[in-house]
Length: 589
Image 1 (cartoon, rainbow, N blue to C red):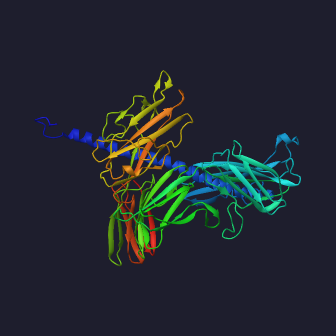
Image 2 (cartoon, rainbow, N blue to C red):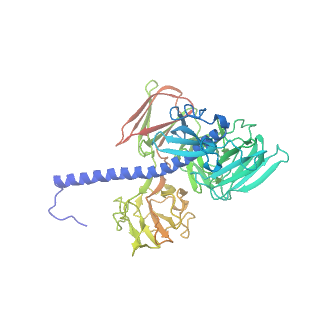
Image 3 (cartoon, rainbow, N blue to C red):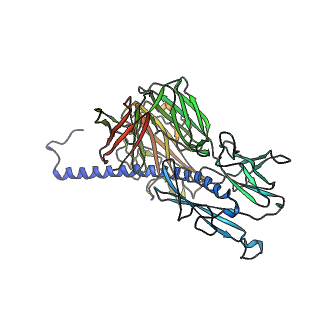
C-alpha cells in the first residue's frame, strides 16, 4: 500500500490523538492483567482458608467440653476472640483467626429454654491483605445421645479442597486397643458425613482414614515416632459424648518436573527434593517430602499426587538458577502441571532475585536487577524474563488476525454472545433460548521468538453449571499461517477441559499461537460463561521474573536495586549474603 502524494507528516492534533489512544491502550492492558490474576488468587485463597479452617476447627473440637470458650467471652476458655485474635502466616499471606462461642438450647428435647444442650463454635478467618473474611460453624455436644450409655459417637465430615462436602467417601475406622478390636469401613452420606454411634470409650486410639476413588487421602495420626505432636491425632471417645473429626480430600493430579541447564539442554541424573506445604505434625512434620532423580530426558513425572503448594530444591552438585512458573508450584486438584527448573553448578554463595508486581503478584519481565557491594567493588546487572498471554474482553467482535486490539478476535461460529455485561463470552440466544454450542478463535499472539516453551493454559471461572461446559484447543506455528488446533494429548481429537493443564510439548518451539474455545450447553436456559483466558509461556531459557547471581563473595554490605519502566525503583540496602539465598522484591506501578 502506498501513501497518498502530498502528505508530508502528521499535524500536531493528529499526533496528540495518537498519544492519547496509545495511553488508553496501555492502561487497559494493565487493568486486564490485574483482573486475570485476581481470579486465580481468589481461588487459591479459598483453598488456603479451607485448609486453615480444618486445623482450627479441630483445635476447638479437641478441647474438653468445659474448656470450650474464648478468652473474654461467655463461656470463657483458651480460644482467641475478636479482642485477642491470633495471626498466622500461610503460603506468604497473613491471616487473622478468632472464635465466638455460645450456649445453645435444643427446643426438640422438651426441657425448655433454660438448659444448655451444647455449645456453638464459630470460627472466623480473615485475609489481612485482602480483608476478605470467611466463617465456619460447628457444635460441641456434652450430653449423651441415644444408645450411648456405655460409649460415645464419632461424628465424621469429609470435604474437598474448597470446603464442599464429598458424598460417597470411604471412611475406615480402626482401634486395636479395645476388646474386641474395631475395624469398620463406612461411606459418607450426601452431606459428606458419617456418625458412628456406640463406640467404646478409649483415649487417642481411634485411627480414621478418609479417601475416595481417584482422590487423595486424609487421616488421623498416632502420637509416636517422628510425629509426636500430630495436627490431627487419633480420636478420643468419652462415654456419653460425641467426638467430631473432619477430613479434606480431593481429586488427584499429575506433576512433571523438567530440569534444564542455562542452554536449555536436559539435565539427567539430578536429585530434586520436593516438599509440600501441608503439615501433619507440629512444628514441621510435612505430609509430603520426597526426593526424586531426573531421567534421561531431564524429567520427573509424579502421577498421582495430591493438591498442595510444592517447593522443589535441587540437591548434590546442582542448585536452582530459576524456574517457570516461580519456585512454589500451586498444584490444584484434578490437573496436570509442568514446572521447568533451570539448574546450574553449586556455588558457596548465591542470590536469586524474584521480581513481581505488588498489586497482581505477576512476575515482571525485563526488569533490571543490579547487585553491588561498594566495599568490595562488586557490581553486576541482569534482566528478568518470562510472560503471559491474556484476554478477558471480546466485545470488539471478529475480523482481527493479529492481537492488536485487546477486545477483538479472529472469528466465531455466529452463535456466541460477546456483548452481554459483565463482559465475557457466552452462548447466543435465539428466540429466548440458548444455542447448543458456539465456537470462537482468537487473534494471533506473537511471543517474539521460536525458542518458546508453553507451560499452562488457565481460564476463569474454574467451574461451570452442571449442564454446561467450556473446552479449549491450541494451535502454534512459525509462519503465522498454518493453524492445526490440538488438545492436551497433542492431537485434534481432545480438548483442554481443566484449567491449569500443562500445554502439550508439540506446540513448543513455535513463535505464534492461537486458542479456540468451544462453549456447549444441554439446557436452553443456561449458558457457560468465560471471563478470561491465560496462556503461560517461557521464551528461550529465561525464567519469569528471576535473576541469578552465582559465585559471589560471602559477607555484608550488599545492595540490590531493581528498575523497571512504569514502576517505582526498589532499593534494598545492607544485605548480608551467606549460602544460597532468595530475595523477593515487589514493585509498585
